Image 1 (cartoon, rainbow, N blue to C red):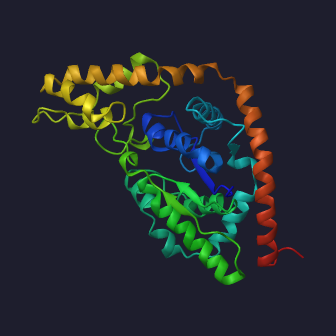
Image 2: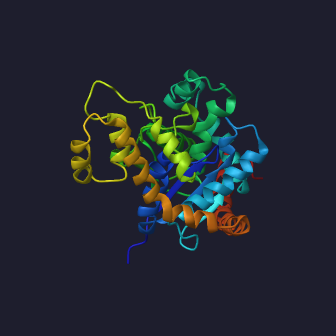
Image 3: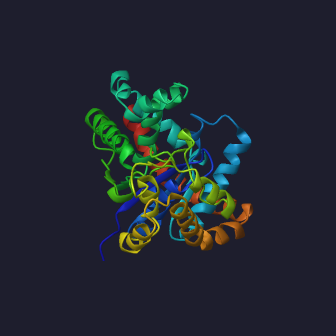
Length: 314
């Protein structure tokens, strides 16, 4: 039997999860993780680029783990761990930062976009791609599932790996990205990409009333018979064949179509929300402790090789 390829993914713990996180990251990972030797990292250090609230960081970390388990991840089959529990991530990030140039990092689309949207241009946000590269390269990942807007970060990872390998000899595997184009970018209630930064989200684990309120605030184009922003989100929960008669029967009735979308979202998410509510914080902490032990063993071995090659090991 062929050895499974290794898959690595991470999700920031920087705020309340929304359906964009689910369709863009949680569900794709749950669907594919059994095909691979899978590693799932809670990117709590990455979250510090925008979140300056210790209580929120802790709460969000717990939420992310509960969300993945509720979405169908089995911690016995997937290594789930917290980025900050494995110190080799930040150590390798520094080594990789010494391999790339400032102009190289200045080309990052995500950095320029976030700064343009008003986020603080802190050094952590600027260096984000090299910490992400370290996250991936420590585990010799073959595949990294990312949204279309994160494709460049995996390209940066390959570039950093290639530069290090050229300078010090073959050390890192250059990973490939896996992008599911049909749900790569989930639209928000304003038609832009759904993002906490844009405040245009539909919460994943909110109550039915909050979900309905968010859906009813979706921006619509009054010039058409079908509200495209509503329809774009609806396609995530029902097939186009199922939606065709609904939208045909309710042409121009935007309120009815929004109410139908809200009902479909709440029905779809109900089992997941129940599983999420049943998980305790102590269960989550146990999962993370077990995962950190497994991840640490792999990361430490890789970092020992890096230290030897760059000359800091005597």
